[in-house]
Amino acid sequence: MEKFITVVSVSWYSSEHLKRLIENLLSKAENPEKVRFLIIDNTAGADVELADALTGVPSMEIKLHDPQSSQRSISHASALDKALPLIQSHYLLVIDPDVHIFRVGWDRFCIGEVESGKVAVGAPYPPWKLGKIHDSPSVVFFFGKTEWFRSVSGGWYPFPSFLLWGWNFVVRKFVRLFGFATRRRLESSELMRGITSWLEKLTGVTSPDTGWRYSKAAIELGNERTIFEAEYVNNERSTHAGLLRLAEDFELFFFHGKPFLTHLYSSGISYYRTNHSDNPNVWLSAIQETEGELQ
Image 1 (cartoon, one colour):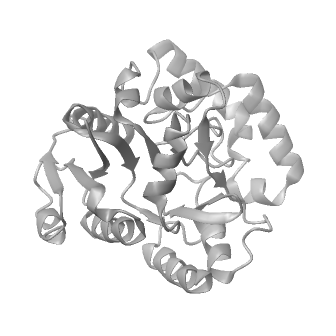
Image 2: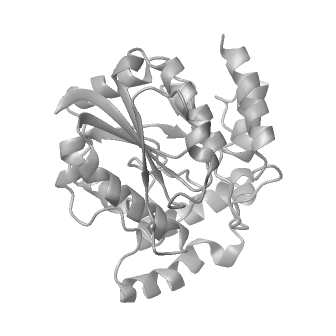
């Protein structure tokens, strides 16, 4: 396969996010001519704005997909499963539409990591998303060789067997302290972080999500993966005002002390929600401020 990068992202009425993401990725790439885009339209063509928004993007293909499910994680996974056989490049980046990259030369960096022996590069689930995998890449940003992704069995489907799903449903209530362990409380209480971290180690992954088998497969190969550092609002790395706003209300990831990416992740789940977590305008304003601070 050609030594290009195919960027795969799933769209659910995400035309504006994708337009920004693609411009961002190309502007920060060292070799933008070697970046291809495959967009899976999970509206099966109902999003009439998608093609117009992405007009003029070089080396891009949109594939229509009917996920046959209204469950968010299942429909997302089915789109990624459709995309994987279509990849013709040596490298693959799976990324959410609502991501912004700060790292200049992200493409060279990721390729360098996997060519040095790392099986994958990416952003894990933040520590306040309890019951998930925190030491391996997640579907937010997951980079690796295409042949490795194809070697992992089970695909992107998010849930385990029905019996294990039922067990997890009960156990993660304990891990989340029956809803008391919200993001804000975890950020402000070192004691609560210690308790929930111990419960996570005791119970394992109780909230698997899209692509968790890939995350697990990377772990099983040892430490040969590059993981970005998820940010807590009280971490001293967020010294700039823009970075602090991103850490407070959204997802912010560092690598070796420097910001790599931010993820909007608007969620209706009460224990993840913050004052502005569902406000893309606040997110974009903080990104703009951060880009100015980093120059």
